[in-house]
Image (cartoon, rainbow, N blue to C red; front, side, top):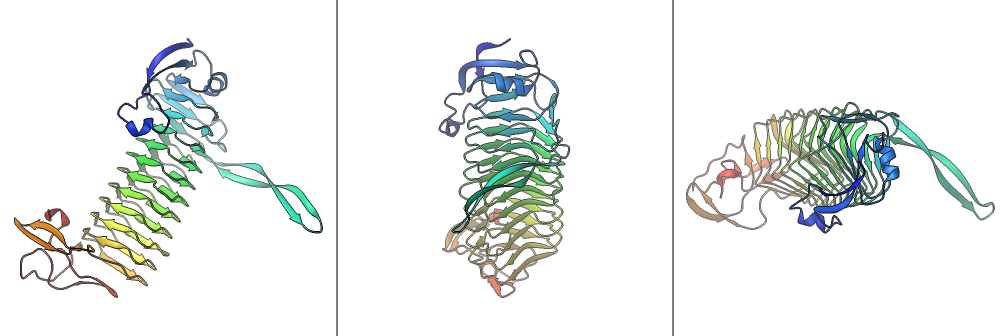
Length: 396
């Protein structure tokens, strides 16, 4: 059934994606079917040429797949009907080491363990010269491990105790879109030493560790419109700066909703961090110069927002509603209002003033009716000088 055909890659309208090398949404290519043309996905990968497409029929495929060339690999009818499970649980189900790979429409499972490989090292001295030796390096298995650029990973389901659903390592300019990562042994999606990636519309839940974890991943990763619930931590940035965290729903996690540690110059805006067992948002260990605005942080079982040794953050126009405690700040000095006056409409009247945050436990008054409290809201040694009298949605 190997043939040449015109196939829709499913990326119409993604103009920015074309600039990353997917030149046309409709391309002429050779299409290989599994199991019609080759019994396994790996056999099809090995046999076909770069730029071609592999379509996988419904069924259960037990294999670990190495993708080392530019290919489109997609199921015929979606993840409910096409399952790829690890034959070796210590290896990744899909390992991608080529750029411009598109994988979509699979349920990926059972990469539960860790494998090892020998890494070549050298030691040199003036007296003994140089000698080569090897060390054993342990690698945790993932549903998909990506060490490549400009790839599209979409509409897959990662479940059943993969150590991690999707793992990116030293990978840039990839799109991770509309995947589901549930019940994995630790992380849902993990980015390590990776930049300029887009995580969009993914659903992450019931993972033993972190829902979405950025470690040492700085510079223009965009985490947008994802849902993370019932994980240990919903969204965690560690040594990761200059990223955008926008319009995510992070709730009912067993610790924090959003955690930043040693991470600076990030933008956190329009997120929902509700009903987490500890804090809604936490900034630790010199997480400085972040912008935290337009977020709803409500009904968390400890603090709405917690800061420790983190300063010069701009935190304003957020709602902190019905948390057990609204805020804690230790060894931290931050800006809790807009840095310049803002023109706004409140209850039909127009004003210009600085704007802070809405705190549901604020007890001050508003004698002039401009929607801003007459007295500051105390934050340990810090303060919000312009507390809002109503949630920020009431200020236009």
